[in-house]
Length: 311
Image (cartoon, rainbow, N blue to C red; front, side, top):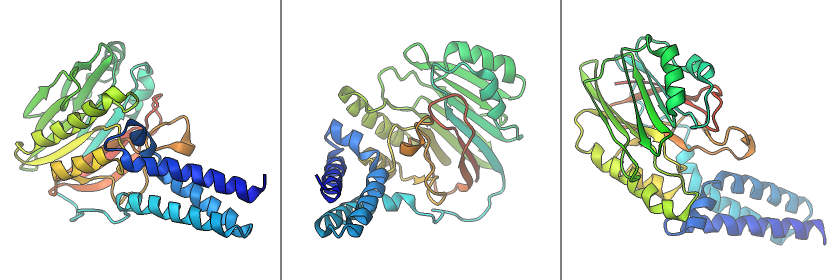
């Protein structure tokens, strides 16, 4: 078997897998396939280059055509222009979000990454009761407000800490896998700011496909009844090119805070060659994103997000 034929067969396989992603809205296999679309495009471009050097024109044409199909689908989500940027607001807030992983008990490492500014808010999900107790011992005197509740099973807890006193906090038990797990309201610079936290199930099981979509769309629908500016943040278990994510943008009328800051992937930490962005923040038009970046490792399979914003 010649090298050109091997490249053609591998490119055809990648093309088939990537095309399955177009059925993600109705197919479990398609949902799994679509998440890694940037890597299909990259590998197909490399195959096209190799085929070109070997003068395998059929392989070159096929690989390039499939690479373009993938690029057209993902490039709108990877714009380097800061969407909605209007200039610096009056008051900056440091927002820290992390999926801790329920098996992670490294409280010292986690607490060292929590921002220390006077206007910081930290949101940690998948916090087990044991880790919550350890974090309380390290952080309880640093925040004006703190709450913790189990939102799914007996190990998935949400720890919410803020140096700004909230107006109201609504905690949700999400064992039915629908809707947000917390809504917190603040008054910042004379404006109302709502932070909504969501964590739908992953698509690793076919039976979780519908709850994943319904949970995100339900969260988006609830936002429309909130007064003031809105931040929807969480581990959405979906990439920006997933149809569920696009439905969420359309329903919520929010914009992707990551847009304009490059390809900031958050999972899986332990295998960088295939990292994808699963953790997100969507914001309303009155919010300026000054900084959006990955934090340092905290012992989880997810990277944390560090976001500086103003209203």
